[in-house]
Amino acid sequence: MNLRNLLLFGLVAALIVGEGVTGSWNTALGILNMGLISAILALGVNMQWGYAGLFNVGVVGFVALGGLAPVLVATPPVAEVWTANGAFRLLFALLVGAGVVVLAILANRRLAGGPRAAAILVILAAGFFLFRAILDPAVEVVETFQPATHSNIGGIGLPVLLAWPVGALLAAGAAWFIGKTALGLRSDYLAIATLGIGEIIIAVMKNEDWLARGVKNVIGIPRPVPYEVDLQASPGFVEWAAGFGADPVTASTVVVKLLYAALFTVVLLALIWASEMALKSPWGRMMRAIRDNETAAAAMGKDVTRRHLQIFILGSAVCGLAGAMIVTLDSQLTPGTYNPLRFTFLIWVMVIVGGSGNNWGAILGGFLIWFLWIKVEPWGNALMGFITSGMADGALKTHLQDSAAHMRLLTMGLVLLLVLRFSPRGLIPER
Image (cartoon, rainbow, N blue to C red; front, side):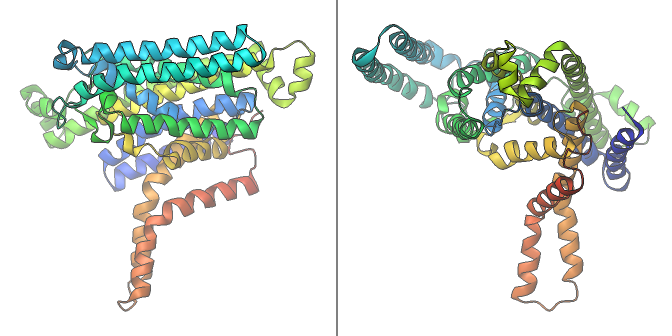
C-alpha cells in the first residue's frame, strides 16, 4: 500500500477521531462499528462486480436474509407453537413446497416437447394447492399465539455468534438458486432479475409473521457482549470507570461499542486477508480475465458460467454475514428498514468511490461513505440554520429548513459525480 493510500485511510481515521474529540465518543464508535460492517458489505459487492463484472442490484435481499439468521439461531423457541404442532406443520409444508420444485425440475430435464410443458404445469398447479392447504392452517396456529409478543416460531437458542456463518449460508443458498436461473442472462437482465428477487425477499420477511414477526419486529435478540445495565450494576466496573473519572453509564456504552468493534475488526481482517490471497492467486487472475473478456476466457477452456456462479455465491455470502452482524449490533430485526437506497445504492457508492476491483478501495469507500451518510444530515441542518438565520419567517425559510433532510442524497450524488469525473477508477484504483 503506497503513501497516498495510507494518507486516505489516515484522513478517514482522523474524521472518526475528530468526531470523538469534538462531539461524542459514543457517536464516533457507533460510526466506527457501522463503518466496519459497511466495509464488509462493500467487500462482498466488490467481489461480484470488481472481480467478475456481475451487476447485482439485489444486495438488500441478501443482507435481509443474513439478518434473519440471528432470529432463527439465537432467540429461544416459542414452545407453545411447537407443542401445538403449528411449527412442525409449517416445516412439513416447506418440505412439500421444496419437493414440488424438485419434481418440476426433474420433469423439465427428462421430458420434451408438449408433454414436458403439460407435466410442469400440472405439477406446479397441484403442488401449489397442496402446499397452501398444509401451510395456511399451520400459519394461523403460529400467528394467533400472543401476537403482541410472539406470533412466530422463534429460534433454537444457540449463541448469537453462530448466527453469523448461518447468515452467510442463507445468503449463499439464495445466491445459488438465483445464480442457477439468472447468471445466463445478459448483465442488464441480471440486474433486473436480482432487483426483483431482492424485493421478493423483503416482501416475504415483511408479510410472513410466522417467520420473524414481519413488520412487528423482533426485539431482544441476544448479544455477544455484556449489556450496559449489567456493567453499571457491577461494583468492579463502577470502580474501574471512576478511576478514569468517567460516568459509569457513559463508560459502559463506550466499552460495549469497543467490544463490538473488536469483534467486527477480527471478521474484517480475516475477510481482507482471504480476499487478497484469492485475488493474487491464479483463481483471481482467471476471474479478472473472465471479467475483461468472457469470449477469450471461454475459448481458453474456462467455464465462465460456473465461475460466475461461484463468485456470485461468495459475494452474497459476505453480504449475508454483514446482515447478521447488523442485527446483532442492533439487537433487533426490523424488516421495514430494509430498503434499496440504504442497502443497495449506498453500498454501490462505497465500491465505486473506493475503487472497484480493489479490496482496500472497497474498505476505504465503506468507511468514508458511511461517515458522510451519518454526518451530512446534522451538517446540513446547521448550514441551513446559518443561511436562514437572517431571513424573516415565511414559506421560503420553512422550505429551506425542510430541504436539509435531503442533504444526504445530494451529497452522495455529488461525491459520486466528483469521483467519476476526477478519479473514475475510484480513490484507490485497481492495479
